[in-house]
Length: 215
Picture 1 (cartoon, rainbow, N blue to C red):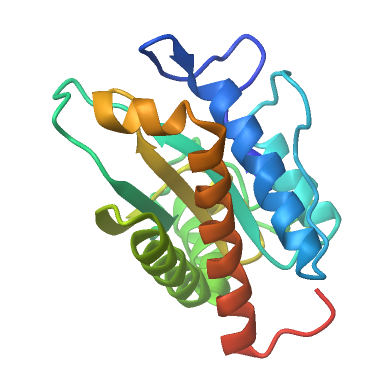
Picture 2 (spheres, rainbow, N blue to C red):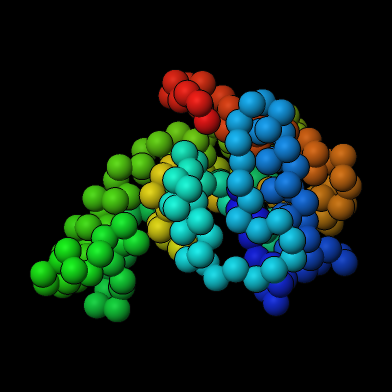
């Protein structure tokens, strides 16, 4: 479980709430819920500390983890915007400055051209992208059903924490803290607990569907 932001990076802040605090609490609750279901969950951070973006999926890659789930809350200039969103890894966008995938050693690539990098990134991501889409869909559904709130959909994104994960990966935006109603909900521990239960139920449902064992 990855709690977004942290330390010198507070994330978004509205109505006296800071994203880094909300998502750390949410991530801990999801991890606890997963543990109660017999699954092992490792937090990328368990306190208010800053972690570089690449370090987060790197922790999951080293374990190696079966899934990578990053938790965030959203914001928008339009304070009427509300709802849940879940992101999965989008097709890679590679330039000359793009690094090789973390799983590929530079010594293994004779000529790291942009074309070669693009092929390597697509190979890495294509192995897990369809599973990530499936996981995102299930979490979106369980959160909508259990929280009675709108799911704005699942979307592809090129976030570092998603594209560098070597396993199915999703980023969950639990709600819009810029929306007054949702900020009030997110401020309540009971609501965060319900959100954590919904995310954990989505993960458990996905694992049952794919027949995962010993996770």
